Amino acid sequence: MSDIPHTAIEAIRAAGRRMDSLGWVPATAGNISVRLPGDRVAITRSGFHKGFIPEDGVMAVDLDGRPEDGSLRPSAETGLHCGIYRRFPKAGAALHGHSVPATVLSRLAGNSISLAGYELLKAFPGLPTHEAAIQLPIFDNDQDIRRLQTRVTQAWDAAPDAPPGYLIRGHGLYVWADDMPGAIMRLEALEFMLACELETRRLRP
Image 1: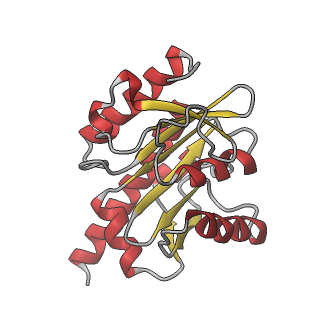
Image 2 (image 1 turned 45 degrees about the vertical axis):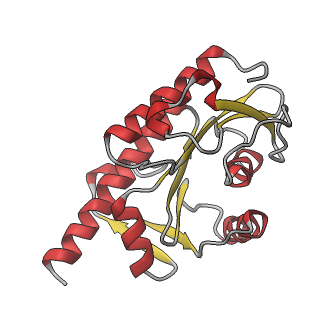
Image 3 (image 1 turned 180 degrees about the vertical axis):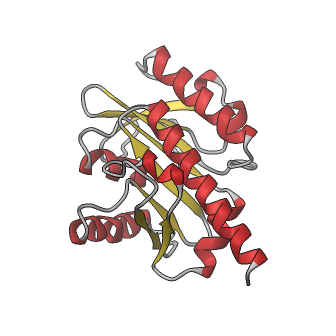
């Protein structure tokens, strides 16, 4: 488990329970991380159900995703978490879930999903009222995480004001914030809006 603060482990475990209670991390899906001092990241290990993360289900990696304990295997998507922390110095926590709305809508949409007029847009920086809109980017899934992160980085370069979240097609949602409570709030806001979008498409195909 390396030298990981107990508070970081418990924050990750609590986030996993919250995401599980809302149906966003079925089976072994999803991954959760927090930034640690000294260019380190605490992240869920591969193969654990996120609703039942044991104390040794969290491990430490550096900002390039290299495990501090070579006998442990981190999440397959550790590189995407590390990409967030390298790019955004204020990011303190990142969450990835596999909800039904995020998975379905990312398969149906093009390169982004527009979210406009929702009260919960206020969960995002610079949007003080519902009279706003964001374009949530969608990236094609890729088993080559380094290549996928390169595409994400290129999109950040092209749109530096993009919202702190994105979708992977047919796969799920990534969000990040300054701390874990902020990341959970942002995830819940996006998941609510995506669920509304999916229901709207069902009622008005």
